[in-house]
Each structure stands twice: as structure tokens, then as C-alpha cells.
Length: 213
Length: 213
Image (cartoon, rainbow over all chains, first blue to last red; front, side, top):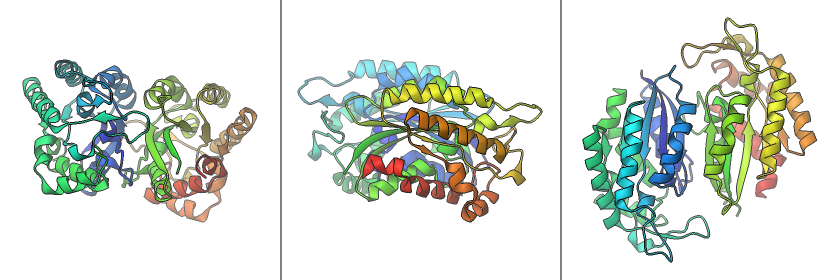
């Protein structure tokens, strides 16, 4: 049995927007490991609409409050989709790729000097359902070409830093199950079956399994 | 349909320690309202072992990052049990009642000036299973007389401030279902059925219902 306290730091895709069960993928992931006998504490620190730069500003304070050194603490970062979003009426992405990568580098470098770290990349969007406006007055346009390019760059960065990287874009973009589920979502947030598929993908990921087995 | 983003600010009893489903009571509560058609965003800001004073130090920063004024945001506070805990080897509670009440007054007063607020009090502990040490090296002793006294004082404070208060101690202490479930927990954290019973109690609470119906 492994005992860990884990902070999952991300955006609405970590919080679980659109998942009527309110488990999201971190909850499903931890529940699956609990069934295998592991003792996990799940801190879901996903905030809707957060970009890499918004996460950079808060992750240290929030995680320090949750991971006292007395206990075994771990960090899972999952972001990127919102950096690639273009607000309606604007011609520019929220965070340009160069700044997104430098921000990820700063976050991951500081995180790795403190606790073990995993990094999970952005996931495929549904291009037939753009712009996305799940929350009211603000609408954003997502596109898979931008997600794919950022995911590839994040993967190269993680390799350079020696941090395990899960390329969710590659894992899901060509998966017929994901495509069917994603079409039933709002353009970026799938319904609950999408969160279950992401959890299943993480459960099977060698980077994650190395923490538990 | 009501659309709300809600921060649930508390301790391990909000995080859901011991709940193998990883939903805790805020997750169950929001899922139940989703079934009634409401659109809720659930930010679970429970941190294990947090007292009122630890919550006072962090709630504003964490909630401000999650509740931009562009969307309808709400605050649910749930704390108290850890203030009454006596660390093994110490003769003193972690936060004395007078300081606990003054801290709650400061939190609730500032919170109410910002967003609508609900306050949920501490819950009954299982006195036959003390001290409690779910997490390793630190053990604490809880006692229902201290929980009951603090809950009563919190209720009076909330009344004075005009904030709805759910007296979970009174609601659960004499409930045979709670007693049976609590005996299967670790002394303060029930198994999942306890979190379901708390969620059921909040769902039926007039203070909560007034936000949704």
C-alpha cells in the first residue's frame, strides 16, 4: 500500500466541468487506486479558464498549504488548452507558445526541486463546436492544430527536464471512443464518459504507475 | 436552473478523508443538484488538519482565484473540529474557544461583505476511537463535549452576523444511522456512508435550498 497526498493543478479539465458526477478524472483516478488498496489524498486544484501563467501565480502557495513535509506529497500538473484559446473578437491566443513553454519550464523546474512531479498535456477539442462558452459572457475558440503543437513542445520540454509527460493529445486524438464522446460535449469539455476515459488513460500510464506499484 | 460557482472551504471533513469514492459531501451535494437541473461548479477547498486560524490565512486568496466577479460566486465554510483537537502529549486544544470564535467572526464578516455565505459547523466524533491518527506521525484527541460547545457558540455567532448556520452536531449526534456509520470510521472521519448522510442533510437544509430553489 502506498500513501500519498497529491495536488492536481490545472484548469476546468481538471476541475471537471461538464462531468455530472463531480468526480472529474483525478477523483476517478484516486478511487481506482483506492480499490487497489492505496491510500491517496486528492487535492483537486483545477480552476476554470486558468492558463499556464495563472497557474504559475498560485500553485506554490496552494500546494504548500496542502503538502506539509511531514507527509509524502506529490504534484501533477495538467494545463495548456487555455493557453491556445482565442477569445472571441480577438485575433490572439491567450498565451503565445513561447511564453507558454517558458512558463511551463519555470513551474516544472521549481516544482521538481520540491516534490516528485508529473505533467499531463492538453487534450483534443471538438472543432465542430466552436466557440466554447460554457460559463456565460466569455467565448473562446480552440483548434486542434494549436493544441497538437503545444503538446509536442511540452513533451520536448518535459524530456529535457526529466519529468514524465503524458501526451493526452496523441493518446486521444485518434481514439474513436474519444471522438464520439467529445462530439457530445461543449467543444472542449466532454461529458462524464470523457473524464472516465482520461482517468483510464492516466491509470495505465507508466509515469503514474511508477508512483504506486 | 441556477448557475453558481461555489467554494467549499474547510478541513479533512470537507476534503473527504476516508471516503473511498473521493466525492466527499460537496461532490455528492453538487451531483444531487445537477440531477435537479442546476449548473454548479464545485471547488473543494478542504485541507486536512486545518483549523479556523489556518483557514483564515488562506481562504481569501484561494477563493478570489476561483470566483471572478463575472460569474455568480458563493462561499460555504465548514470548520471547527480541528480547533477542538488536543494533540497527543499536549494538554491544550489546538485553538481555544475564544480565539476560534473570534477567528470565525473575522472570516465570516469579511466573506459576507464579498459574496453570499453559508456556515456549517463541526460534526460528532466517535469517542471510543481516540486518539485519531489517520495520516501518520501526529495523533489528536477529540471529544463531543468540546464539539457541542463550539457548535453552539458558532451558531450564536452566525445568528448575530445574519449568516445561515447548519448545526451538524445537533443534526447528527442523536441519529442512529450516524452513530452506526461513525463507529466504522477512524474516530472523526466516517466511511463513505457518513459523507452521504452529511450531503443528504445539507441538501435538505433551508439555508442551502434558498440558493437553488
